[in-house]
Every structure is written in C-alpha cells, then in structure tokens.
Amino acid sequence: MFVNATIVIVIISVLLEIYLFFNFKRFIKSKFVLFANIAIWLLIIGNFGYNMIFFDRNIGQTQTTMWATGLFMLFGFPRIILFLIFLIQDIFRGFGWIFNRTTNTKSTEGSYLPSRRKFVMISGLSIASIPFLGLLHGMTLGKYNYKVIKKKLAYNRLPKSFDGFKVLHVTDIHSGSLDNREKIVEAVDLINQQEFDILLFTGDIVNNFHWEMDRWINVFSKIKKAPYGNYAVLGNHDYGEYTDWKSEEDKQDNFEKIKAIFPQIGMELLLNENRFIEINGEKIAIVGVQNWGTRFKKLGDLEEASKDVSLNDFKILMSHDPSHWNEIVKSDPKHYDLTLSGHTHGMQLGIEVPKIGLRWSPAQYIYPQWAGFYDYQGKIINVNRGFGYHFYPGRVGVWPEITVIELKKA
Image (cartoon, rainbow, N blue to C red; front, side, top):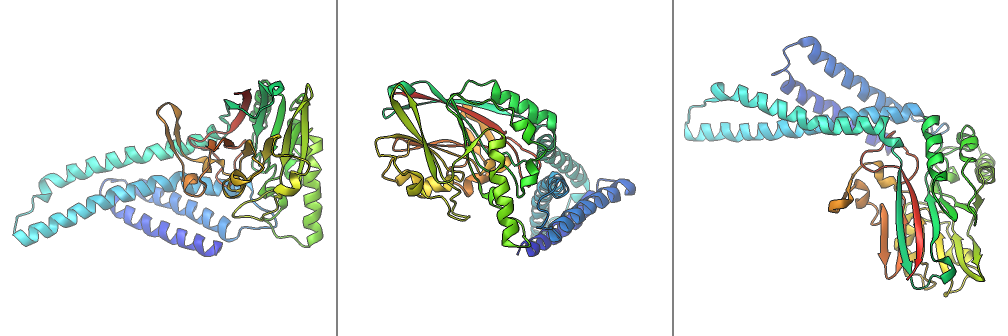
C-alpha cells in the first residue's frame, strides 16, 4: 500500500509539472532556465520515489530518506500553489472564451492578457515563496529552535507541601534523526538552566534501533538529576515495530537494549508502574504506562500501573500517545490529575500565534489533543510538541519544546 501511494504521488507530480511547463514557457524565455527547472524537479521526484519505493525496513529511516522527503516538500508545496493559481486563471479564461463564443463578442485577449498573465505569474511566485522559505528555514534552523514553555496549573487536590512543585516535561527525542551535535548540546544546556523538582520523559527516544542513541548517550547523560528523580516511559517507536527483523529474538534483544539506555542517561523507566514522591509526609503518585494508542498496540495498562494508588492520591500520568487520554484516561474513575504526552510533534508543521489565539496544524485532524494544554473536568493533559523530529527533517511554526509546569495549590 505504501509503495502504491508513492507511485500515485510520483505520477501526480509529473502530470502537475507538465501542466506547469506550459504555463512557465509563456514567461520564461530562456530554454536553459526552463528545462533546468524541470530537470531539477524531476530529479527530486525520482530521488523521493526511489527512496520511498525501495525503503529498507531493515535499516529504517536514514538521513538520506529524510532529506529526500524534505526536498520533495520544499519544491513540491510551492508548485501546488502555482498549480492552483494557474488553474484558477485558466478556468476564468475558459469561461471568458465560452462567453465570447456564445455572445459573438470579439475577444480583446491580445491587448490585455499578456500583462495580466505576467501579473498572475509574479503574484504566484510571490505566494509560492512563502512555503518555500518556511520549509527551508524549518530544515536548517527551525528544527533546533527550542522553546521553553512555562505553565502554572492550580489544583484543589494538590497536597499543600507540593505547592510550587515544578515538573520538567520532555518527549520524542528521536535520536536517529538528530544531525547537529552542537545544537543538541545547547538544548541539553537549556534544560539544565531550568528550575525543576522532577523530570519526566514521555517516550520515543529512538526511531527504531538501540544503536541510534550510541553517539548521543554522553550528551543526554549530562541532563541534571532532579531532586525527586528523572523518570521515563516508552513511545511507539521504542518497540522496534517499524522494521523487519530476522527473528523475534533480534527484535527482543533490540528492545532490551533500548530499555537499558535509560539508566545510562540517568532516567528510571516505568513500565506500567508507579512511584510515590513524598514531601513533609504528603505524597503524589507518578504513574507511567507503556504505549497505548488508537493506531498502535495497546500495551498501556492503567490498572496495573496504578496498583496501590488510590482515588484520593494526586496523580501525574506519563502516557506517550494523547489518544490514550482522550479515549480512556480522562474518563477513568481514579481521576488522573495531570497527564503528560507527546507523539504528535504537532505534525512539525503549523501556525501558532498565542497572542491572537491562532492555532492550526494538520495534526488537529488526527488528534483532538495535538499540542499544548487541554482540560476535561479538572483533568489536564499537556501534549508536548517534542524535542526531535521524524520523517520530515525540519519544523515549521511548531517548534521543539521543553515544558516547565509549576503545580499550585488552588
């Protein structure tokens, strides 16, 4: 199915380019420029198609496949905009031709159409440059444009001793995608500059394989140890489901080695488990479930993870996929006060202008909770936009995130 979808995309891209060619040649007088433009795009299409059709699941996503995707998006999105603009112009021209024919009106196309076409071409190129520059920025600077988001959350149920307790939330490192050591070191330094009492990581430390973290362990091990601990859960990519294994034993060996990464970077992994944090004789529960998602294996077990945790205990739940909260957690009678998730990355593409309340991403058509904080009857989820990136080697408008949540006694 994946191969068939790729073939369809490639065919549509070629047909689209043929249509654009007949529009471009009206304005581009240099045949060299005209055909060089086509040749470059056909090379990009071919590179993308080859990498997708012959994608090797034994190797998984590589920098080559990511950049093939990135270049296809970089040059493809502007072409879609130009196609739509030219199509609208041609539709109006068609209506004009029909009107002239049916009313026997003499066409004045020769006197005004060239200047109008030039205006349409310049306008189209100007509009198309916006996604081009946005995607280019996302692939170079945007993917490491880390933002620290600070949020205060007030709860009646919070024990008084935890008033002002700070939680640092990070997620979705995707170490197999990272390519700039200097920027990652800076991001870890940024984490360490924050004040926090506990650090919680909510999954996807790799894309597929344990060895993806080998070159990064000595970087992430520099994350400071929080006074009340650094805890982690697994995400869907940490189970090795997106590759073909020679045997089930190889897959299990990879999984065990992924789990062994966490103590090396100073984190305690919770697999359907909980831990109590105590201050002055009062306590809160940290509950960590394995991945549970509507589009993935449902390994998370709330009942198992919440053994010895009561309804009255204030609870922070770590669950990688926000669909778990939407489908199960928010209606669970045990009342999970705060859930921390990731997974969506905000699709690494969108528009967020908090000052005017503008928020949009393709992710919202898949996940009702796709980025930020959501409240349901006093039960709150934070969907962190993620630390790393995957598939598309960049971020546009939805920046990598480090969240610091301060709990307050209401």
